[in-house]
Image 1 (spheres, rainbow, N blue to C red):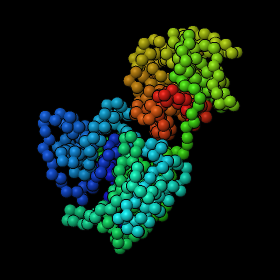
Image 2: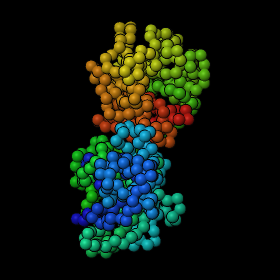
Image 3: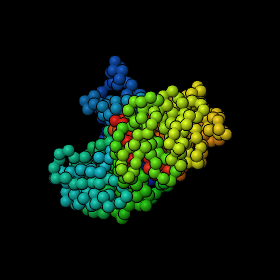
Length: 511
């Protein structure tokens, strides 16, 4: 067995909690070397007048857990070197600092994966300098990933280095006194914008089959392509960063291709498959006609969908019901700004005066009370974010015995109702909270909008800016899984597997 030395990511990011740690904060824009093969670079003394440089140095030290004196800036190359082995360009560091300021699902966590359009067609160019045996290994690795099944990622070899995602190049680095066993290959992780983080480098020292067999070369290339799509190492401890785990994977997977040590290729482990399906589930978003400001799907077993449009009327904006047979929205009388739909398909609306209405026998019946938001659970429970000021926003109230009863705990701004009848809310600090029957618990996540399906599924519009608005996440088995796409508002069908979103252009999209 040989050490792989492949990851172009910091040591602190490699726990994946074992199998496949999602990318933590500094996984993109990095071209790094392992500490036992790096020579300390010549470092230019930082200019004390460059306050931005000092800010970036402090930021990088904070998020990596490295002492501030271990964060060096090389002026000639415009990059930071952290703890002697993590390399980050100044431009990348600035982008991460800005991302930190705008917020994420958790301030110490970030999930940078390939965007949908990149993941579905990852173009790989193999430089002519690569030897035939390594070329074969890369091509076989592409084949293995493309035939994993049940995930959207597809690698494709291209013949020209033009608009490619991964360029495979060669470099020689043999043993030296400080590194008797050189690295085999290197690959950057995805960038913050959803593109690949850079090319792959193969160490030609291992060209000989006596040093690395064909099977081991294939293992190494499958491993490197795993880094391309955001998989980290499964068998190295975290130091200094809080990392994401992949749902449904164990603490330790000795058979994973993402282990740090190269072995002979056999196959992906079961949990390699699980992680790929969790991170890159094969699905598409379907655009629905019309534009909306709010959307609500029934929490029942039938597919019922209503929306609040962008067309102004008395009470807010027009109210429309979707017809799945004609693939069109039909306007009904009335106006509103927020909407919810019960398990029987009955809509509830809040208008621009905060008045609450329920549709009964094709007529809107005014209900007591006032609200900013409303939600109906799969069990029929109705909750509102009231207009009564409270810590966290406004008091949360439940419809009980024909009146609204305030529940204990802090208030919120947006609300959903889990299938077991308890409220989940987002407060005025964007915290995602859930009611436990006594008070509101902080889940540790952040969001902008929230929805609940029938089978205890919870969805949020997160805080991470992405194309279409902000990240979309699903809570399952005690962790948040990021879905493809972006939005600004969300609802969920009663099946629990079909969220419906509105993106930042007002387009309604169904999963």
